[in-house]
Image (tube, rainbow, N blue to C red; front, side, top):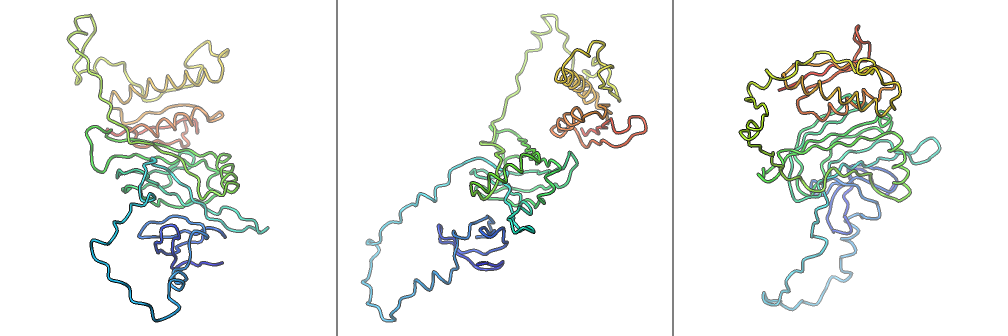
Length: 342
C-alpha cells in the first residue's frame, strides 16, 4: 500500500498539507487537514516531498529577478472554489473497508459524521439507538462548513435497524428562528445493504442523509380573543384551573381492539392501527395534561407494529423522560411504561 497511518500528505486540488490518520480501503484513506478530518481517494493526494523535489531548480545559479514595486503587484484574484455554498446539514456514513476470506472488499464499519454545509453554527444533542434501545449520546457544537466526527458503528450492527436522532438549536440565538429543531434518520438493514452496493458501483465515498436544508423560522402561535369566544357560548377557563375540567386520566391504557370497539373484525389492518393510535394519543395527552408521572400502554405482542409505532412517537415527545418495554407479570412483554418529565 502506498500510504500508511502517520504519513504526511499534500491535497492536490487545494495544495494543503495534512496527515493520513486511517486506511479506509485500497483506494481511500481518512486524512486530517488543519484539524478537519475527511476521506480522500489516493489519487487526490500525494507526498509533499515529491512536490518540493519537483519545485527545486536543477541549476544552483539563477539570473537575478528584476525588482518588483508595490504598485506593480497584481491583485490576487478570488478563486471560485473558495466560495462556499450552503447545502444544508447532513448525516454522513463513511465506510472503512477490509478484505474477506475470498479477497473481496467488504465494509467493516462506518464512521458517522455530522456534516454542516451551512454558514451557521449549531448546538446539537445526538442520540443513536438500536431497535429503540439507546446506544450512544453526545452533546456538542457544529461549526459552519465543517464535518463533526460522532463515532463508529460496525457494519453488522445495522441488522438492528439503527436510528439517529438530532436536536439542533442556533449557537447564536435569533428571534426570527425556531428555538430548536429535531430530525431523525432510521435505517433498515435492506436499505443499507442496497446503498452499499450503489456506493461501490458509483464509486461514491460515503452514504449521506439530509437532515435539513435551512434552519426553520419561528412559528408564531395563533392568539384568540377569549372574550369573543365566551360571548358566543364557549366555556373559557383559566389555565391554572383547566385541569379541573379535563376528562380524568388513566394510569393504564389497553389498546386491544376488543377493548375499543365491538365492530372491528371487518376493518383493515391499517384502519385498526389508526384507531389504536388515536386512542393512544387521547390518553397520552390526558396523562400529560394531568401531569402524571407515568403511563402504561398495553399494545400486545403480535407482529410488533403497534409497539414500534408507539415507540417511534415517544422518541419525538419532549415530555418523555424514558420508556421501557420489559417483562411484566401482568402483561408479559405486551406493554410499554412511559415516564414523564415536566
